[in-house]
Length: 333
Image (cartoon, rainbow, N blue to C red; front, side, top):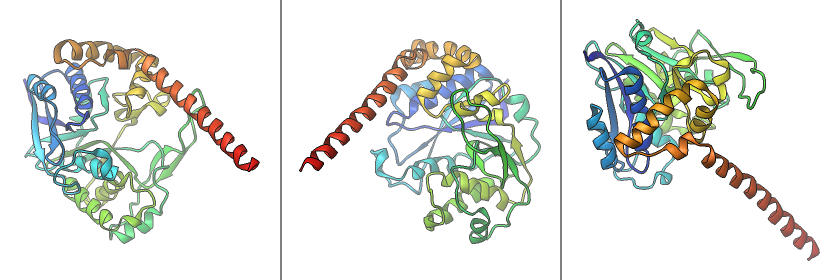
């Protein structure tokens, strides 16, 4: 029986992006089955998903919804010709128009479902739910000044995050308390929530005075954090396991969503951690066999990642050699 009270939504478009949404949806169907609603939101400003992706959506009962991103040119064919934040604004439109009794969950397309999230997500009573960022490092400005400039009451509550990222086998970093700084990777809202409207409004305000932020890449997350306070409604903080990145995997118990960000990180996580390996060994061959998207070499072997890492190391040494040669030549003259 189809659960019509809960719908997963994500973005999709052409220019090579649709492989991420296909991978995400394949994991949704593997973990949650076919009885949960899924929608792919596609901006009309960008080329549509490929024919292969559209056939995939039809085969997997995915609704395709078109929308216009007001922050992008009417027609865009080069993703590098606009600020990256304007592309992340595609998220803002996925939560609009939530029907009576519906709970909608936005997930970034670069997320893999590892365990069934439905029991937890359907138990949330608040109108909206979000998960904290990993670290505060992507926001170096004054939260209080930003809230004052946007005329939004400063939040009284705080959340706990790691102070910084660590890598390799380094011990878990210390944690700090900060004003709610929320990831836009996973967002829940139901028909009662005014978050979708306020999120768009706050991002418009910040975009109109972008000098408010010293780093503009994460405007969507800053805007989300402020908008959630602007609603004046209660909200729920999702556990870290609902947005686990590769960097913090070692410190999270039983991750539900793996937010891998890059395919290299997904391949590394698949090689290193048992649950991603189990899921990927199921869905990646199926994608190749059933849907014509073959990522087996890229995700189930380490050769592509090692090759790129080798190129990176080689290029660094080459740049140093060229730099030293030019300096020596300049000194001789």
